[in-house]
Image 1: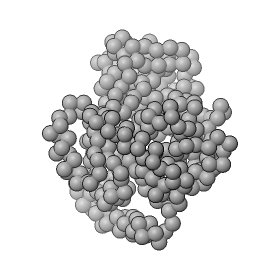
Image 2: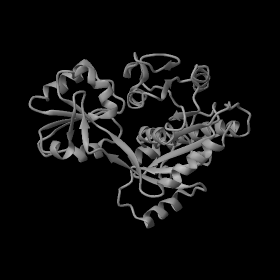
Image 3: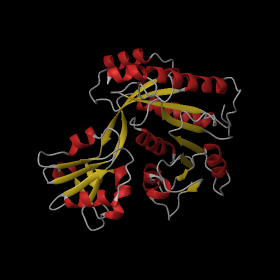
Image 4: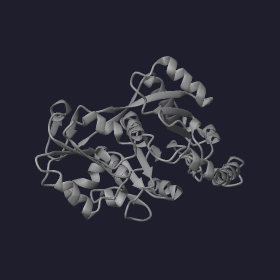
Length: 339
């Protein structure tokens, strides 16, 4: 891998130059970033995938939706539709993409929309009879055509952006200097026992001038299906088939796995084919199927006769959750327009 990275360094330098020039043009207003008359919070990362954007979006929804009409706008990765789509009762994972559909299922009072053109998506949301008070932009840190009012940058504990390189030599979508656009940084997927001293060391290593927070993935103590739920403590000893099509699924497997379980791992956002479904079903005899919440929205229609469960997750801050909340709430309360 190190040898391959060395070979790809020239291409990485070219990619870094292109993205740096693009950012420079936006920073100097030589390319136009559109602003809108309401609070817009962008959640994203510098690297490709696997930093916990979905649970962070859900955290913000829970924080804000009791007081405000919240809308979530995503690109709708791997959906089978084009243009702007606003979720309604006809929505599916195919029409929205798995993560936006997950948001819609969990938070029916929140407007969920998808559009690869974020400006058009925002304009469509603002043209609705019920206009949102706040828009959350999912995976939009590099979407410079929209000027969000608040940027949350996520970086995974085991894959810090400061240790990485730009594509294709590494996994960064843009040079590390892009962090300067962030209003705060959240180090995600941390061990729950990460000490204050270790947190301070990571903060120093990141070298940023904005608040840094540390969070972990909190797993539910129950798994859920269309017909009920099971306690995880009871489930662990049962024969299971664990299925995941997410980035870095090892913690999901480790949380549930028993020595006699069967594990099937697919690529992130995997579109399950007929052959995949048949492969899974062949393994289900006398086994409970457990998958991730993101995969469940794509698998449920194929397993109406089988016991298919999903495990919900949440973002849980190791410390200073109230400070994080206050930063978000202060921005929303004081922002009548994006700046």
